[in-house]
Image 1 (tube, rainbow, N blue to C red):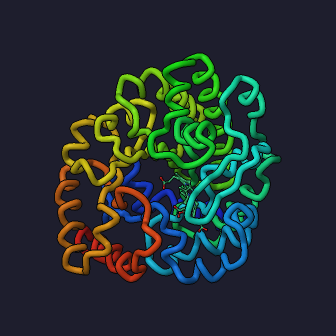
Image 2 (image 1 turned 45 degrees about the vertical axis):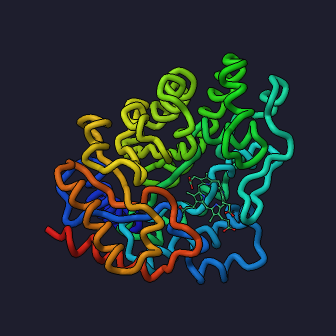
Amino acid sequence: TPTATSDAVKDDAVQESAFLKACRREPVPHTPVWFMRQAGRSLPEYRKVREGIGMLDSCMRPDLVTEITLQPVRRHHVDAAIFFSDIVVPLKAIGIDLDIKPGVGPVVEQPVRTRADLDRLRDLTPEDVTYVTEAIGMLTRELGPTPLIGFAGAPFTLASYLVEGGPSRTYENAKAMMYGDPELWADLLDRLADITAAFLKVQIEAGASAVQLFDSWAGALAPADYRRSVMPASAKVFRAVAGHGVPRIHFGVGTGELLGLLGEAGADVVGVDWRVPLDEAARRVGPGKALQGNLDPTVLFAGRDAVETKAQEVLDAAAGLEGHVFNLGHGVMPSTDPDALTRLVEYVHTRTAR
Ligand code: CP3
């Protein structure tokens, strides 16, 4: 059918995109750029469509998800879209009583502290998240040659919210379980690995052409503890999606000491925050992996000259890498001037055009 033909032509264009080439460490026409949290409060058009609609409710509406995901692609001409959702959506979908409170973050009504609490975490099936399949179908039709990145929270970062009951600076309850009841902890992370893997598979099967595992808070862990108590669960997630042929990105904040392990867990691309320059990050990660990053998101508040100077430093540090995806070292901050982001995309594209 003509539809099947045009789908195949579009799939080829997606596969040949600068973003997917960089993830595969192939030569690129220019360094691809996207931003974590590129959709969201920095954009007036986002604030407008979200008016009066709760965060989690908006994630369950395919029309809104499609519109919000496309907004930064239209405005900034980034090289990839990231599916608009949240790391706690799969937990909500299996019936955990939680909400995302504005200005606070995810809040869990009954924190997971005991074996009985763990038994409340059932497996995720595609039927639990039909709105995700529907949204990604709509999105991939609208995106044309632009790849869509699917994502999920990694077991440790999800556990940090589930065990604490909300955002935390110290993760004292989660780490107390990790150190004090390693068996319960291992079972919790293993259960979360299965939920996360199922959530990523839904997104890949619906049309996502790369996935990112956000272990945002893994930087709170010493390498030996990460290796022993967290890496097995994250590695399970990566193994579960290995056969799908989509690049797997692994990201955390403050993970300078963990970069080698983030790669070893099974990633094709390792995300780096701004604390370690990319040439040094490449030495820590070792050969065979692309890197993503790593402009400090606060640089965007410093004016055009400073943004360009600091962006050029990132590009210079990345010059010897086999695969580089330009990104911030963490998400776009809500008060960022969106024009600064648009100019940054153009700067990276122009400076790296080959
Ligand atoms: O553009 C994108 O990057 C896609 C959308 C996205 C959201 N959350 C939307 C969102 C992604 C990739 C996430 C992941 C996420 N959620 C992470 C990992 C990334 C990271 O920042 O480290 C984490 C830790 C969460 C948990 C979470 N959800 C937090 C800490 C918050 C912020 C709370 C606040 O109000 O400041 C959320 C809510 C959230 N998720 C918002 C958005 C756009 C803001 C809520 C709103 O706009 O009303």
